Image 1 (cartoon, rainbow, N blue to C red):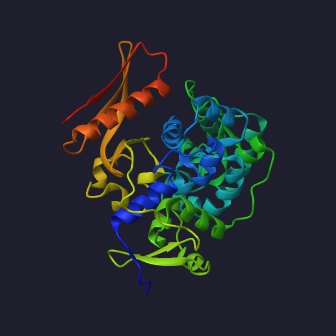
Image 2 (cartoon, rainbow, N blue to C red; image 1 turned 30 degrees about the vertical axis):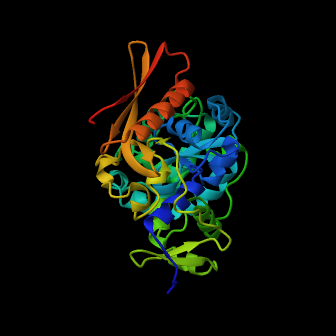
Length: 365
């Protein structure tokens, strides 16, 4: 049993350091996306805020260019959710996640809608359709429904999302553009084949972005199971948390001073910062997860005060004004409130530079 115990504050500062949130990083957007092992992108605009919060010189046009230039893509990966990743990571991560995606679909509410459908035949049909031209979900439902009239069309399309690495093409995910998902295979979009699965490298990279962490944390982030044996063979450094759970880390990874000050931060909705550990107290503190994550799968944007989640936030745009609404979970001190006001104003200057007026408002406090 490891004899070094890491308390909550130490784990908090380690997580923030590796998430580029102790201080903004000089990294490029692409390097940051790779360092973070991707960014959840259920809300297509969320990675823009996520990178702005983490990087010194990030511009929204930089990320938009990465996607239109096919250097970054959005597709289903960890936990069966849409992630923004680099082109190389799309080819490396998808094979590792495929067993989880297969298992996820088998247990989903979509599976009964296509019991009579042969997987290989559906995959071949799906690849043929998106190989002819990029197609949106409605087009896929219509085409596949003609071939399998006894099946639920929605189930057929959701099966393809799990069974084939489908990229959501731009302009979906491009700031200020939007648009519905339009699919093409990652191999077609990037002109390269997916790689052989390498779970050991994925484990090491997770620890580099989220560690120290336990096996349960790693499995929560990825959705994979059976990782204990993978972790055991990597020669990792071990700690314990204050509940006695074993935590693993890269042998040469350092830990920041737990008293390191942390500036006020606006964390994007659906950010992996709050989703990637089984025990989320290292970032939520005493805040109940339900205050951030709703029953219907919405993950709210959060504000950090002294490094811990201390409230939620959202944009409000109306009547010529762009505003950030902050809902604290408790009473804020004057200094913390002023820091959030200043940071919120900087955020609005980046997201809504043309708005006639900006405002940062506090609600419920």
